[in-house]
Length: 268
Image (cartoon, rainbow, N blue to C red; front, side, top):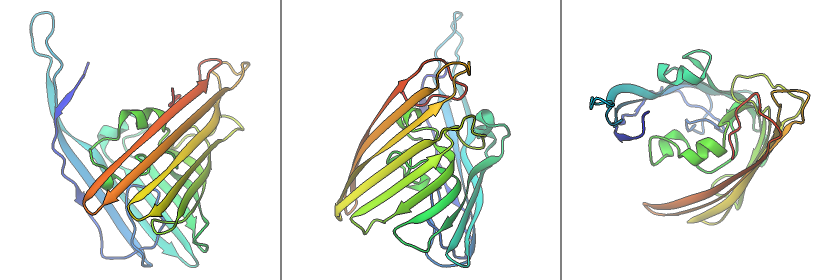
């Protein structure tokens, strides 16, 4: 079993056209403030070395190889009036192990932004839960998101409707969503929905803090049994002064499981 990764090289190439765009982004790409259409993409090639020890005969089980952690391509833009769109595909063949095909829809949503304090998006996008989960790929301090975020904050992307308001210059910034709860590219398998919310308070330029929550239900494998209840909570704090950044968050998930489920349980 691959128990550690001790070496990787990360190279990020941004393939951005000169056409501008206007968008309130929920994906991994930041958007500019002008109108128009923009094609975006980036790749993250890397080299991995796995120290797996030796077998019973003393033969090395170490492995190494090159791969793409991310390889994404998409289109963002805006149309009259106050409507923008965001469409991104994941095209790395190394990401296809958990998806039906190696190439799949990562983000795809439309946003109505007439009112700055209440922008509405519908489609597939990141769940508004957790600080690190909602940090763009280019803003991460490491190649991968932490295990606790991957395990408790998931599914990272889902289908639903999202309302957002505020920005980095306002005292409050919020996100609230109603989502299927089954993950990206999957039909909802019950009439219930996941309810997710995140509130950020920005009292002074250097400090922001807040929290988020998620609650929902999951179908049991045996539909004759009671649905499972899921609850997740998170608290976050970020301090930024010039080039120094200190941030952290606490995530907690508590589930009431009455039987096994058809879709993955992320919190625990």
